[in-house]
Length: 270
Ligand code: ARG
Ligand code: ZN
Ligand code: CA
Image (cartoon, rainbow, N blue to C red; front, side):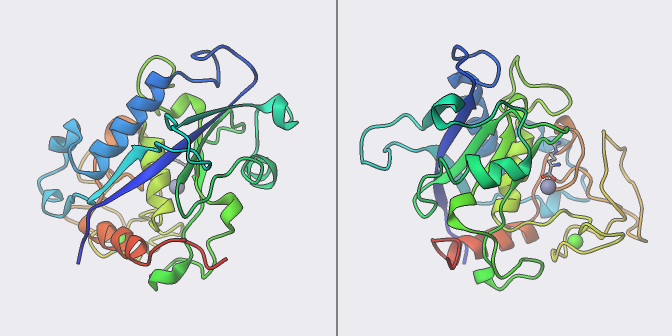
């Protein structure tokens, strides 16, 4: 049975000593926009939900998962949920950062207990990377997840600073905070809807099998892999379409996320 969950987030904002609101040291406003975006998207309260094609509306679901800024730091002190880190104080090299550097150095050097917080790093990523996430361990017995998602010291999500929030700084077409919606989908056990293979599987039946990732803003219906008449669910957060063109998670995706949450914390066996 489904339950309502609220997940505390700590935003680790990695910067170079810029003033707050400058460069990768994004403002509190951007973070709050991001939080609102997550809570709307996961609750099916996003204003653009009405753009979901009628054929997919019956499977558009409320995940019953919400997010809140952490209110205590690991020492139990009052905290506003935003942990600003000057990279010089940690001896980290200058950005842009690779996924490898994040996993080898930034995350292990700054994570908070992932059985108590979702760690969300805001960093200056290079190479056109918008974000990446660590899967949970497959304690929920779901298809397509590895036995070990990864270690506690790298658990969480990472997003490019300019894709966080939806005002000003964020860069089109990834400027509505949906990179984080997508990455947290992975963090809660979702695969890409094309299964990272030609007509592959995401182990979810109400996301039609599709040939590959979609970009931009396709028009409905887009039929591939004999998935007519409705075609690809390219407006799903787990495709690669523009932020303005993705509006839904499905009921089958909800079942996976709920199974991961029901398997409890920690999300890893080690
Ligand atoms: N490429 C990234 C990933 O696979 C994120 C894609 C996010 N897409 C977006 N429209 N914001 O995890
Ligand atoms: Zn992805
Ligand atoms: Ca599917």
